[in-house]
Image 1 (cartoon, helix red, strand yellow):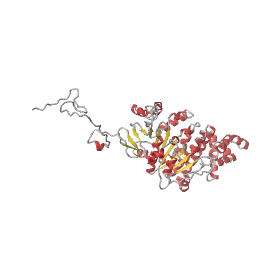
Image 2 (tube, helix red, strand yellow):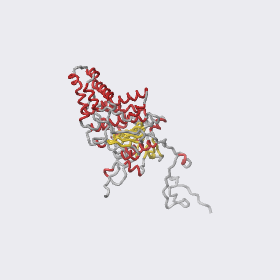
Image 3 (cartoon, rainbow, N blue to C red):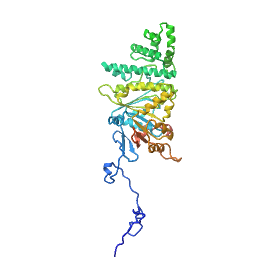
Image 4 (cartoon, rainbow, N blue to C red):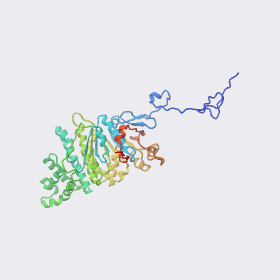
Length: 478
């Protein structure tokens, strides 16, 4: 008997999953679903020789798995700088509230500390980094009325380095400290009066600061005010007045502004000696200003600027000595300080720019680029956009379509990347109980390269440390 030859259906040359429904066609009544396996390209290339990786680097802090290839993705701004992938180590973190901006920032903070860096949080407005800093074995200093004080003219962490320095290094540190003190004083005056000091006032302020510094090891703002009021000959020469009454009229506005720093809304916080101390061997440090969160923006802005200046000294001090170490710094809610008065963007840049060459990885966190548009002048807005665009790495979370126009001013986005970011913005339905689609998902962008979409999974320990929704948790039974 001759065995019949089976011929495939001309319309279906490849058999269906259940086989051809003919005799001998291998028809199956049930077919189990296939199992999915993930592996590296070197492992699976024998099974599927056309596997292509995303090009993601696995070295660095693990920030999740690639959403398309499931490869582990690592992020190390300092390593990328050494490899020539980026031109600076700044990281811009943006996304709508609640999608996990602080979670990935804290993951990076912990990882970089594990790599040997020191961490500093200058001006933690909400106090959300305090549990993490304690867990890392660091120190937290709470600033506010009745709490710790931060003298903006204190040498801070630069003090010990300045004492041990000699020769040209000592001269450099001395000039660095003076420039930072003067820039911070000018910024505080701008906050109080809402306008920048004049050229004459800036010269008067510089001489008064030098006089106070010569007379006191650690001057405070009242010492600068006293030196200005006394009116030594160098000050009178700048004011072009030898008559005491005329000198008082010329310097009245500046003296009254300095007086407001001592007797106004920020009285008792920045007009007395510092009670904040630092051990440069500490792995992490936070200046917690959450006690001032309910105050006016000018009080919070003054606290943030003083904290930034102090942290710049910390960066400089960490880069000196026999065991210099890099620093990772997180600036959150920074636009709350810069929008108070015109010129503060430039002032803040002057305060912090001196520490950039010392090896710092900085994270700047914001909800929206619309924060830039809230700055007082177009010049401030242009400078702020430049600060954002100069970051070497962008971590982008879910955000609305309206945000993408501003985002495209600082980086290129393909249509696919834009669609991915907006798909993470909100749940597709009103049904409760589903995980937010954007929680823990980020697009890593750098330069003109294609972005890396990653999904971050937190460990149970991280979930407890990084939780920012504790205020909405149900109360526990007594």
